[in-house]
Length: 145
Image 1 (cartoon, helix red, strand yellow):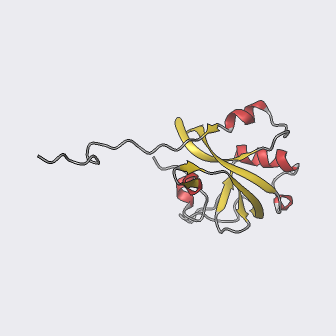
Image 2 (cartoon, rainbow, N blue to C red; image 1 turned 180 degrees about the horizontal axis):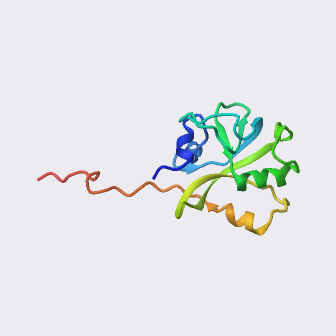
Image 3 (cartoon, rainbow, N blue to C red; image 1 turned 90 degrees about the vertical axis):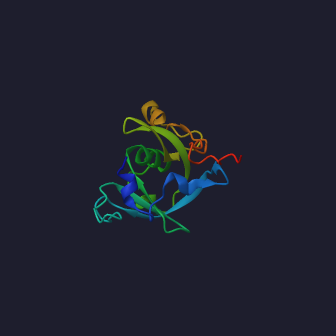
């Protein structure tokens, strides 16, 4: 299934970017740039209609949809915009409900003591644990006779 996230391209942060040695790692990052909706384009040359942020020390960007936008707002007290620049946030891969199923997604995780509405906490999903896909019949080595 092709999702909107897949069309953004390699210049954008995806859940597998936080996978290292069979573990999803937590990333503590600093917001370096904030792009308003419609100001940058994805790999397929379509304008991205959500807020997008870039981080200090990497060229990767993160498209900030509703849940992550709400959490960043709650963490630093400012609505989307240049006030987010310089703010430090924590990214973690979580399993979320999306497109009628579940999938890994990058979520901004609020710090301890940050007051977040219950419905936003529910949308954060559950911590993801990486598991390789089981080998299919064609992937299994053939027994020699």
